[in-house]
Length: 92
Image (cartoon, rainbow, N blue to C red):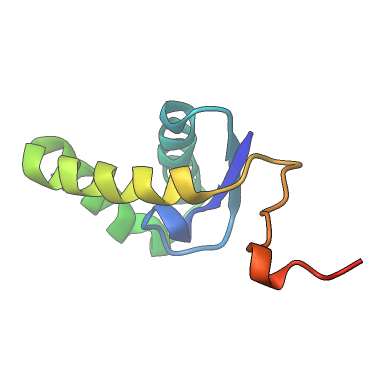
């Protein structure tokens, strides 16, 4: 499982979204935006508009997906700590 914030996916808030796959993360991120708009949170309107435009423009979708995948792939799995570089590893 990995965690991303709405903001990391291009949204306006720091709500944490958790998913096992990139596809699940994208789906849950889209659902988060839909849910927030349904609750009257207009700060998510720009992200919804961006999603709608990307779905109509393959080049925009590809650019967003590439950025998303770069961020997603850089995240540690839950419970996995990031290894320190050898030169920063404390001596025992």
